[in-house]
Image (spheres, rainbow, N blue to C red):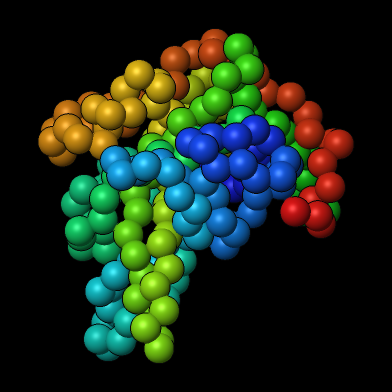
Length: 193
């Protein structure tokens, strides 16, 4: 499941400086049915309350495909896509973790299925926010993580934005085996952005 992204090219008419280490809480380029915009990566579920009736402020980075359309925490969210060149995962024990870079074998962009909404904060602040959707891993990713982001084909993006829930559910599948490249990522500055 994506924990960090990277994107070094322009997408949807939005140009950013090359970003090799996009962390949760930072802005990511997000595509919606209305076009491209920047959103904060991490979703504070609107209207979610704990057992005492107090608002939950926990940030969700990744929503599970199996429950995204059923949980009340995701009520009224809309569908989006987060385009990236790849993402990172880690294996190993604390202080000895190995970072891995995951990309498409053909070098094209990955289109992560996502959900978004607008968080209304104190003082009238409005923050567009997004969370990616995860599913079971493909064979390419299985050895390094038990989940992966739902990756859509570029020609299916309009269908993702506009189809009914039942069709959208059928689109949330592991990416086909053999189409991702997994390689060591020892060259990334994890402290920089």
